[in-house]
Amino acid sequence: MYTTRIERDLAALGLRADPRHVEAWMRLEHSTLDWMDAARFRSEVRIAVECIRAASAEQTSDLARSLGLS
Image (cartoon, rainbow, N blue to C red):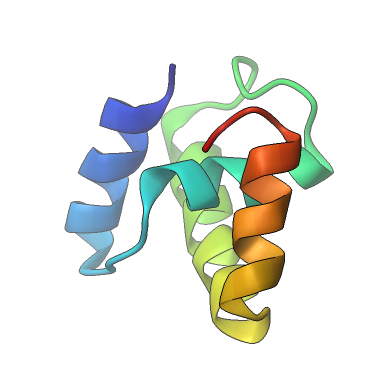
């Protein structure tokens, strides 16, 4: 549902990541993302990318899969 918005923010931030993985890390902290204004959403995208970098690829894939985002 948030793929396009995440892709846009990743591009604006000059970051590369699978949008499903970004959303998974965002949802680990926030059950819903609708309440975020644009600045907060972009900030959370940046934080999610840092989480992806810190975690193993398997951890990130497992998280996305557990949330139905794979």
